[in-house]
Picture 1 (spheres, rainbow, N blue to C red):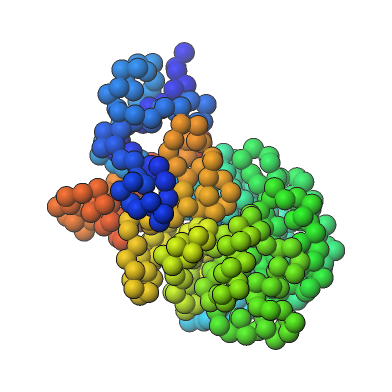
Picture 2 (picture 1 turned 45 degrees about the vertical axis):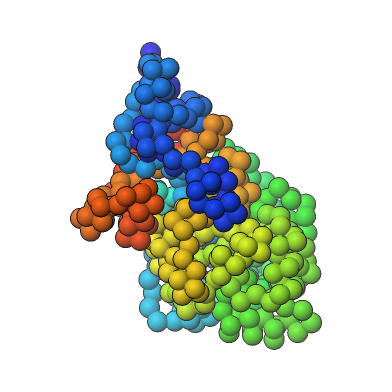
Length: 435
Ligand code: GUN
Ligand code: ZN
């Protein structure tokens, strides 16, 4: 009988600590001829290739040569229903929602369409090396079922929730406070904790939820505190002004969530760009996470997220594509955009910081840092093999690199799905999908 041990050989890249706090050199564990042993879907040993080969002669071997072996990417904020309308031209947030997003999301009342897009989304995400994500669904329970069914079939650790809205959206996309609570609760009870799936209570953002709906969803989250809660916060100035007019008594945007208990550990706030001092303090004290969506913030024209300053302020930060407001499914492209936004704000994020945000940082931000986002013994074996010479332009640059980081940075800046040679989910190789 074949052994169920799998030994993957290559350059292993893992984190001993957060590079924003300890600096890149101390944070990173790199083995230029390393190995990862996988048993029962988990990493059971790591070390030198030759040592592990000798100690486990019964293991099947996948030799990835000089490729980088890293934890799979964790996309901490994405809208899978926006897959088919990515790269829609010419609007800022509120018009973009009304003109492009809501009409597309309306189509998810059709369970077959939801399934088609969920399948397409997961095939794309995996082809880009993303092995876990926290996604918004649409208002339709069918869209949640479609997402979880597709994730479950691939054995993935994935999160979504019904996107609740009861105002300022087309009638076909609106529920009510009670139905939002009831539908969300039913879906949560059906899916949360099944295999590797978990549920996120999901008010879209304050402008599309009445106070009664925010209150109902705050109550639901309080009843299920092991779930995540995801929403949007302070993305664009026009949006913030609108929130101010809709909630005249609120101290600030965050207060519209805080008032109903929608803050705390496990609360994921997408964008969080234009924050007041009070909001920053409350976010930090509460243990909430800020999700940086750099391609989206440029594409929709939202603003510059100050990642380095916010990390220094002890904020918990994840990284995300925000597809389809984001303009890419690729976490490599997303790291590149985070770098470019850092430069515009006067800081050059180190490649180790970018890689951390796309893996460990996001995993910690979504409360799963003990299971995914890093290569270490006991972690779930979601692993990506990355070719550092995937195109002629990248190859000629990495060929003259003197250090790991100099070799990796061209792939961060110019890489795409061609850099992803193999993906393992729970230790199972994924055939590169033909999408
Ligand atoms: N704010 C409310 N909904 C959305 C959305 O779908 N995408 C983005 N980028 N921002 C939002
Ligand atoms: Zn979003």
